[in-house]
Each structure stands twice: as C-alpha cells, then as structure tokens.
Amino acid sequence: MLISGRGSNLQAIINAVESGQVPASIRVVISNVEDAYGLERARKHQAEAVFCNPKNYSSRREFDLALVDLLKKYEIDLVCLAGYMRILSPEFVQAFKGRIMNIHPALLPSFPGLDVQQKALDHGVKFSGCTVHFVDEGVDTGPIILQGVVPIEEDDTVETLSIRILREEHKIYPMAIQAFVEERLIVEGRRVKIRDIVDL
Image (cartoon, rainbow, N blue to C red; front, side, top):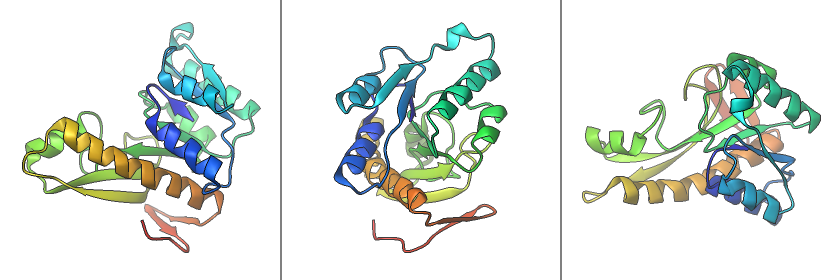
C-alpha cells in the first residue's frame, strides 16, 4: 500500500483483509509523508509501516527506483495506491506492470487529476462516483476494473459529495483487490472482465 494521508481506503482494505473478504495480507504500508495518519493505522493492525522521504533522492525516478527495490524485498504481488499523491515514474509502472491499482474519486475517463468533485459540480453532471483502475504511464488512464456511481444532489457541495463518494470507494476497492487475489480479473486491451462478479 502506498499512501500520503489519512488512509481511509487503507482502513477499508485492512478491514476487508481481517474479515476474510480479501484472502491476502498487507505486507507493507509506505508513505511519502512522515506524519501521514495512515502509517499509524498500519501500526495499529500490526502491518509494517515505512516512511520514505522523497527529499533524500535527487529525482522522482531515483525515489521510485528505491521504492521498487523496497517493495521487491517484501515480495509483494500487488501495489495498491490509496491517496498516494505522487505520479509514478514509467520505471515504477514497468516494474509492476499489471499489478498496480489505484482508486480515483470520479467516473473515469471523466475528470482525471485533482479537484475532481469541484469539476463534477462545475460541469453540472448528474452522476459522479469512483473508479478502481490499473495504473499505466498516464494520469488516471489505465484499464478500468470497477466503478461505483453516486447521484449528485441539487444542494451538494464538494464536501458532501466527497463523503458519499468515499463511502463507495470503501466498498469497491476491497472488491477489486479480492477479484485480483482470486485471479478473477481478465485484461483484454483496455477492457477488464471480472469472472463471477458479485453484486455491489
């Protein structure tokens, strides 16, 4: 797990692992922010928690290559981004090609990048939501695994919309990881098929 902040999606995944929904273990939680609360969440659940300081490296590439080496030591099968606020270098993506997931608080391909709830409100869309996708070299451009849809209310603010989207994130991210662990994801070009998908 790579995080930068409070780690609410990390907590949802921890809960899914501990309940048996996701038949896996969290080998390590790494943050690029020293005081990220997600590291404390990891420690409370006996998961390895590591702070990696980007300032110790001369470039994004050098930092990412150090992360690759660290993750390989833990013999991980899947890298999950949960509020990780750095764009991964091509070298990192290639090292774990097809084995990096991210969750984004919009219905991709609409509204990639940052401030997406504000963008949804500004555009007047009637539905927003969240997307779990595989990570490629672009920004929020990888193959889509699962999406959760949230209707936008007339009086929604960025805050109220964000809260409802986050609830959906906590549901679909563990489901996508579960499907990966159970080898039920079939990637065909940009399309991801899920064998024996359960109702959301």
